Length: 56
Image (tube, rainbow, N blue to C red; front, side):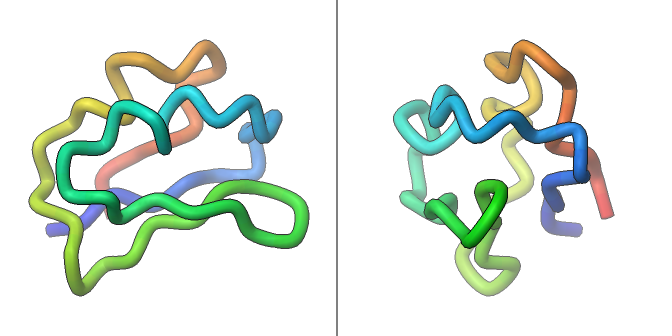
C-alpha cells in the first residue's frame, strides 16, 4: 500500500530528495506521492519533520 502526504506537509522537500523510487513531486500546496511507483519503503516518513507521509 502506497504512502500519501497529509495536509501537515510544509513543502520542505526532505521527502522528495530521499525517495529511492522518485515517487514524490511538488504539488500545488504540498508534496504528492505517485501511488503507482511508490514502493512503500517508508523512507519519506522517516525523514519528514512533520510526519506528513502516512500509509494509505
